Length: 260
Length: 197
Image (cartoon, rainbow over all chains, first blue to last red; front, side):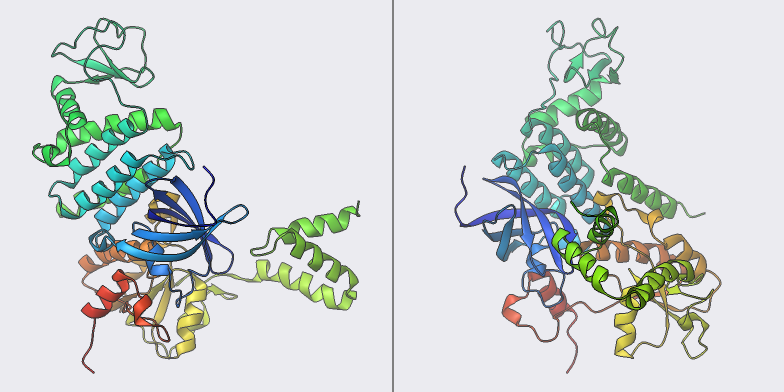
């Protein structure tokens, strides 16, 4: 779709790169234009009028002017600054992880309104929900849905029979579950307990308010986290950089809660 | 087709920040035209800056000795350390002439999505420096953006258990601007941090 000379869009700022003396290139996630890049002139100067409205993890209304290869950001007004996310170390790190996933899983300029809604809703949930881990796990699973990698959790991928409540196997290259009979010869299969599979199915089928009712134990959350990392890494074929930092924070927390 | 030597110079100049192919070309031809007694000092300055300058073993500022002038000076308050992201920030703070303590340069800020973690900047060295030292206040002067804030929050978590007071530079409205253009985060913090007049 040809863009008009000047246009305006809602956007969440998901990445920023320094350019030259005082400029930045920003990656914006928008509801109708998908992932776009914008040139933000002078935003690294302290007196920049735009800088505060174009910080990472901000939901803004952004005006752009079409450029030869990069569109220039001409104006920006904050819709939601997500202040709680910026005032807490854990929350900021979680939210950055979300934006990295969105950035890595999406191609440029492809409209994906459900994904925009999911990201926005997840940032809001992170600000208010009690169980932040549950929010992350829900996002990871729903993201796969929105970008076309929804895992098949109901029946065995190969023989199509419904899964029995025994240890079944998650197979990233097949994009779903294998029953114990079909598993041999599939080296990537990852064993999943019936309990973990139940939680995955529940999260896949629920909206946020319903998902919040789930009592997710730290242990189960950790199981899901490992599984999701495994699948993400298989799909992306590269590391998700912010996970190293999330692990670092988790370590710090456990070392400070058990006094030496 | 031009000579290989000048192509090489253009290529190298092009790598400098803010210098595009056309600027690189202009600079290269300018250097070609200037007499050698004017270009030699430039070449020597580039070589010697890499050889002579190292990082202060205490605060990691750039220096030509083992300790930088600020760490060497006995006029500076030893009980305060100001944490900055890069050596240029020290220049800006020193220009004000208000701060009399010492510094610590992190050489970066935590940025999870770029893969910059706690071990990639000089945090370990800072914590080691704070243990058994006369420091009673650490001033966090990292940039007021998301990476700087994250770094500050992380450092505060590490330093507070050591029993040292941790402060953060005030975040509010920059001088010479207009209120109507301020963003929500800046304004909220300016209201929270207001002072009696």
